[in-house]
Image (cartoon, rainbow over all chains, first blue to last red; front, top):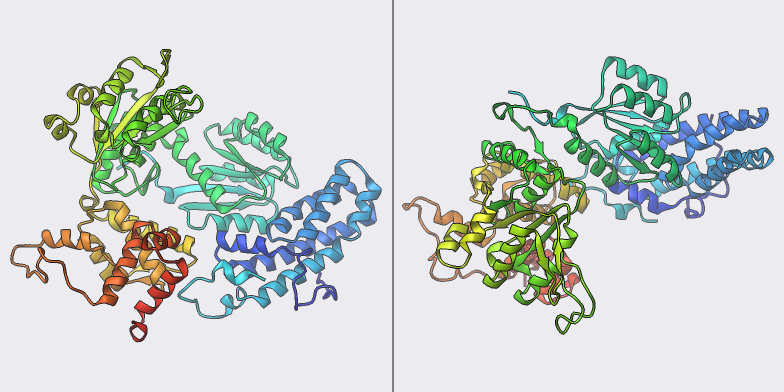
Length: 151
Length: 470
């Protein structure tokens, strides 16, 4: 499954309601910076699988499956700073936990769009700032600092 | 030879986490740790893993697709009670975490958490868990790579580790001696960590850093009105350390009058707060330290002999860095990685010449001096290889090295007259000395040099470039 580009998330400016760049800055302090694009790619694959499962769960009105996949994605969304997606998935979890099926399904219907926007924003952020280039260029003698990730 | 703490190279960690992105992040967090990490995406595959290869530690996300994490926890804990399990739960599910602890988890992490937090918990568990401290005979004792928070495997440190291990189980007072920067407080912490008091407080007090008129209050506390600035009752280190360990560093700096009170406290476990008549009782284990020769202090009348004998039940002497051989390289490598991470720079290795210089240096400032030199090199140079020219040994340590040279070694400068240097060099050295003193903290170095941090940066940059020197 691939995500179509979103008009609402242009590469010109990162929408901080969608993506919190501070989360990536924190991540760049915790891990090798060259791993961040790898993680984003991994997240994209994982999210695609989860979104397919969520779409199926919506069709089947299967709250248990919906809850499971929302929970499974919320941790990585939070770690990568996908604020809007994290917030939505948490709300889905809460609705499922309360057995509020209509609310859970209503929220889940937005998941694919918000997930697409989040991944576009993540990719734009890495293109815009030098973390992505660190993969393609020879290793620099000086590490890419967290400053590089500032919007 | 057997090892008392297993070589951390062989510590096996099983990560049970269904989110592959998160699992990859955790593995990244731990990539510098001496762990072999296996990842299981499901509970059933994790339980299968135990049948073939039992891990030393488990990280378990409680939310799994096939089997509830709580059930996995119970199963593992029942079948492998000595295997530490760290559970991970989503933010806000503290009740779940508490239940997990009651079920047998060693610790828990609430998402999201930083790499520091994860590493801290894993290191603490691996160092303190009983499975890592099997009873061995002294001849079998050998510590590889790390012991508590120490780094080094030299024979001198192996001997120290054995003593620390044995001292940890005793209640006897310990007197630690060693030069500045050898790790006296680290030793005291290790003894506390390995003692039955490990869950109680470890309170450290530097007697040399506190003015004479305040030290009594710092140790014993005071009551309101005991002296002009005693605006309210205050408990001292003795009460704070109740049930645990009280570490008094630089004890030989303590005045005679207070030495008498301390002796009474050590003998009876009782004391009075400053300004109070009420006798208070605590259960404290004493560890004291000094960088002086305590017996010489006794002979010269500065330290009470009765206090010396009372404290010197288990004497521990920390070897200076110049007696630790290859430990210097292990320590230098450790600090290179640590500071490179902190400073956001890439340094991966030392050149052979740099290693030779590190091994040849006398290290009068011991590990603290090594830390400063490594940080200095990282802050002011580009990696990835740390070369000999990047190592700036301080004038004091160079002088000591020169003093140790054979008599026929030509002296470049007259030791009785200060060396005349170019002004730019003197300024450069002064800035580096200030940075060294404050572990590379530019703000503090700038304060002591009475310039702004930006001026300090600018001058350092200018002085490093020949064309810009003024």
